[in-house]
Image: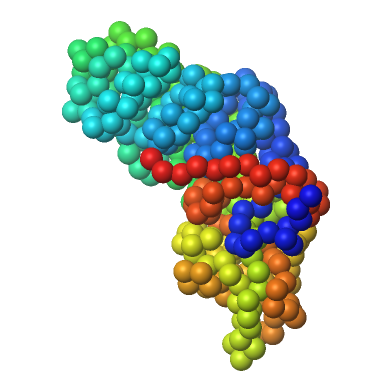
Length: 368
């Protein structure tokens, strides 16, 4: 068997035990609240990872690209929500997938786009937190106009969807719980407005990893979407959605040099391996480009990746001073700020299970 010390670097390491524990934790939470998970596959973009998380069940999934939809359909997944505002030029691909048997649901937030789509179930995107796209839940006129445009075009106003992305900026668990309730109330109100106008709107879809974790009431919600919880990352740890030791994903790197005069250790994992995401910079603790760990995944002496060039990473103590002695050739693991962005830089997960031995190599795809 191959061990981590034998791998080419940089590469992705996935702790299977943490992956399993993270998935089980959210499943238990949603079961307590009586709402099913529609797993978002955009974080993993891997058939093997998603099959592992779902125990082989071909359950409903959420995607962020049509490539994800196509890849997972080919692997047996049939109920697929494409949870990004739809663009008309993508209709041929969407129709080809539907013609092959996919139950593909699309997303819109305007009358203009709604009028371009025919023959699909469609959710109307709701903005419950000012974070991104969507119709305000109290804008009943716009909601009904979109639903009617869908009906005229030959599609079905299947309900509403919202994403509480603002939860990533919350400063406490109580704030996240309040955001989850705001998300729920807004989505349910929008669906009720559609029903008053004569549309069935059976689906009320909400979700983000923080709100899925800390929601206390999901009355009126029919499904929860979340994805980053399978791996977690430093941004999630920074808002107390997980512990740092729950993070299942890391980047394996090799020490390639030193700058003793600057207190630096140089590694072969720069922003091409870690991504440029600096999501912890606005949190209580700035983790730079990632937290540095030993080969077993234990954090090392307050070391972080303080800076990154394309292929060079600069490791130093968070507060300055002399770093520990790590010789050229030593292997390190770096926890990422944003699992989705870091994963996107790589082609495979080198999976371990409580040791340094690689027990599986799970492929990862990218593209749109």
